[in-house]
Length: 346
Ligand code: SF4
Image (tube, rainbow, N blue to C red; front, top):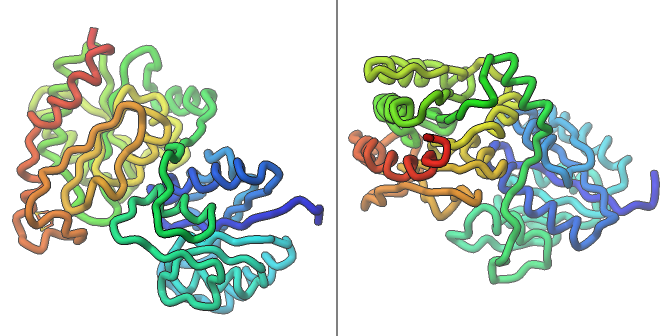
């Protein structure tokens, strides 16, 4: 093993959170240009880390979601011990992730108190309520301090143009025509979703306003049915859209998003991916707080009705009416999207 200093970053489990951790790595590299940063990540977020320039090496966790798997964690810790890390940055707040660098004997274990992780985390930061995700993670680059860091770089992902070329070719998407992407799903739960009927109507508006436009619906296989509904509503309003939910890997969805003239998305991983690719983005927030995880691209808008009950942060509407999303009108979203699309609508 070389004398090069090495740090381990233990990744969050959610795609959007992994994207928002990128500025932490940037700050670590700025402070220690010689530092090798290795990332331990669950398989679902590995495509994000592959596009973070500062991640020198990525290892995939063998753990099942929510499972303790103590034996597996011990084996992982043993293999990490051989790699000789100077520090570990533990981004999930759970005890089971803090166990790994402690068992691996990594001397500096940086993170938040989380689940009372005294001893396991020995450079302990104390979470400030209401701190948004980018400064939440970026604060770990420095010694614990009460004030949130400011002037942070925005999250950035990098996609090779050949990747975009390849996925456009496979899906027969023309690169010389505008592409508008919608992400109507949200893995966390239905409370985060703008209704499919609204997305369908918005798609029809886009098609009417932008000559030659291609509207694509992105998402995981779990979003397929939601996207089929969007397709049906769009068709009823005389618009044809491509339902790509479940038709691409996350790697391909990222590469395709790099091509988009605009993305309209619920508060989900794809919103943060589009933002980190610096695409024009409109984020629709219902049960969640837009100040907590806003899109940060050069052209970004957040829409939230900011109802009294919002943000409830529930997976399903506890009041049963889902007004935070149902009452967010197509007109309101279109009023933000139309000026963004004006340059391509000629
Ligand atoms: S309680 Fe309010 S914020 Fe939460 S899902 Fe229902 S309408 Fe939306």
